[in-house]
Length: 608
Image: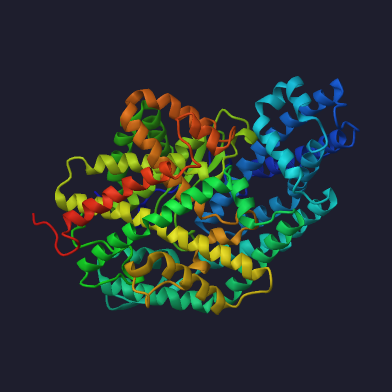
C-alpha cells in the first residue's frame, strides 16, 4: 500500500536529545558554554604568550596541542546541538521553543566565532613550518593551518573581527533569519480542482512538476504574486547582507568577492574560469534540449512554468517505499558499505520526507554527530524525487566517510561537498536507464537534463546575477525592480532562445536562500563544480570498476585535508585545463543527443 503524504516518515532526532524541552539538552548547552569559555582562555593564553616568529617554546607547542584538541571537542558539541535545534526549526519554523533556544545558542556561542580571528592572527605571526615539525596535531591539520595563515593576510584587527562577529547577529545574521522564517511560512492561495486552497509555498513550487499544464501555469502566477507581495522586506534583507559582505571584503583586502569565494571553496580563479568557460560553450546544447522539450508542448520555447513539467510519457509514480528499496539495491552495486549506509538511514529514520506547513522548501542533508546525518525532503512520487533522495543520501555517505576525522578536518567546501551527492545520483540514474523502455528512458533522461540544465544554465545565470549585484551594491542599495531586472537579464543571457523571454522568473533572487548569507557569496558555482567533478569521477569508476572504490572513499574522507586541485591529481585530473570540464559536459551532451533522438527533436514520442 502506498504511504499517504501525511503518513510519510519524519526524521528521528531523539537519539541525540529527547526533545527541545529536555533537561539533557539544557545540560549539554550549559556544558558547551562552559567549554567555550575555557577554550577562549586557552586561545587567548596562547596568543598572548609572546610566542611569535621562530621562538616557539616546547610549552607553547604543548599548549597549542591541548588547545586544538579542546577546539575540536567544542566544535563537535556545537555541531550536534545546533543541528538538533535546526532540525526542529527546518521542519516547523513556528516552533517557538526551538527558535528561542537556537537564538540563545547563537548569542551565547558568539565567543566561539570570535576565537577564529584570534587564532588566525597568532598563526600569522609564527613560523608554521617549525610548529608542523614539532607537533603531530599540527601536522594532522596542516592544510587547515596553512589556509589560516593565508586568512591572516586578509584579516582586520582582532578587535574589528570580534566586533564584526558580534554585529553580524543583529546585521547579516538577522537578515538571513528573516528570509528563512518569512519564506518557510509563506502561504499561497490557488484554485485547484474547483476549490480555493491555501497551501505552503513548498507545495506550490512542487506544482511545477504537475502533469496539468493549467495547474502549473496557475501555480506559477500565484507564486509570483506572493513573492511580489513580500519583495520589499526580502530586498531589504538582500541589500543588508550584500552590503555587509561588501564592507567586510574591502576591509579584509579582497579585490573581488569572486576571489574570496574561490578561496573558500578550495579552488583558484584559473580553475573557476576554465569551468565557467566550458559551461558557456555548452549553452547552445542545453538550449537544444529546451527547444526539443518545448516542441513536445507545441511551443518554440518553454515558458518558465514548463521547465520542470513532466513530459507526456512520464506516467509512472514512485511511491516512497519503492524509492527506498531501489536506492538500497543500487547503492549496493557500488559497495556493501554504501548499501549499509542507506539501510541505516531508512531504518533509523534519518529522513524527513513529506511537505507540510512550516517546513523548509527543497532538500538538504546536515551532519549531526560524527558520521550521523539527517536528510530533509519534500517528496513527491516522481522519479525526480528519487534522484533527489539519492543525491541527499550521497551527502550522508560523505558525512559517514568523514566521521572519523576531527571537526576541523571534516570541514568541506561546497565544491567538494557535492562530489558524493552527484556520484550517488548518477548511480541511480544509470541503474534506472538499464533495461528501460524507450518511453521510460525519455522520462529518466528528461529528469537528468532538468537537473543538469539547472546546474549549468540556471547556476550560470545566478552567478552573473550575483556578480552584478555585488558591483551595483558597492555604490548603493538596489530596489526590488532592479534586483528583478538583473535576474531577468541573467536568465535571458544564459537560457537564450531555449526559454520564452516573456515568461521567466524575476523573483528567483527572493527564492534562493543561499543569497542570504554573508559567508556564502557566490554559492552557485560550487554546484556546477560538483556536478562536473562527480560525473568525471563516475566515468573513472565505469572504467576501473571495484578497484576504484577504496580510492573514492579515501577521497571523500580527505575533502578537508587538501584543495580540490590536489585531490583531483590523485586521479590524474588537471582542473585548470578546459579538457576535463568539456569531457564531463560531453556526458551531458550525450544525454541531450539521446533525448532529442528519442523524441524526434521534440516532434513525437515513441509508441508503446
